[in-house]
Length: 225
Image (cartoon, rainbow, N blue to C red; front, side, top):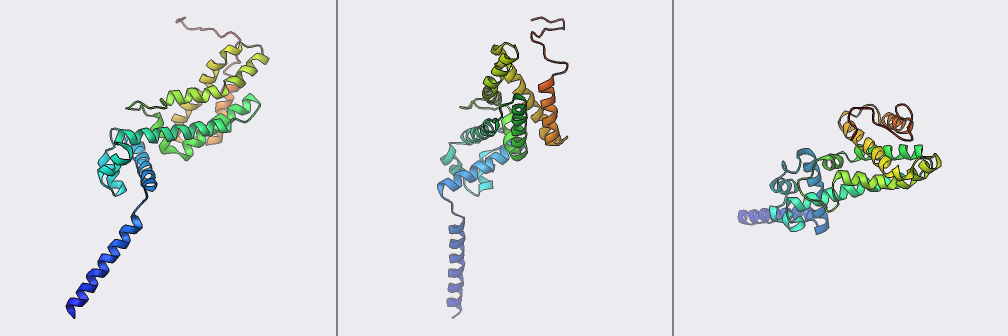
């Protein structure tokens, strides 16, 4: 009788364990997504070099070969994480550029980047780090260049209507977007002033300049080349 009870207890314990295993088993797509989220968090906190495959696997509750099976290693996982974040940021910025007036366009671009920093802080921390491996989608600098390209045509039309050389629109587009991006890096940690106030100051400088925009800007320092 005792043996039977022990056997039943053992059987029940085994069945419970099997049920728990079935509940935590993931599909390939689910496991890949889990690893991406874990990798994203660790890369943001520790950087590429400070993160190991062992730690990623341990956080996911899997063995190291599972990480290699899905991504070929840490480098592959990092590349996918970076690619996803770059696409997300580019999509957020380009989809926000809907205004016809250049000043409102500047506001939309500033808010889009600040929104991304606020909502996807880990992703932005990863993007602004120097990548230790080549990326198919380039670097953060190339991403900023891609975003600037989205506003070149609008700036070109505005320049032409105001008597400026429209060929300089790409230069100003890079300068404007770069200003917003660098300010975003600073705001990432300080988070002051509030987002709307930061955007307002960015547009204030971009739109009015320090003392009005010269049609033919000149250098006033000693260095001329």
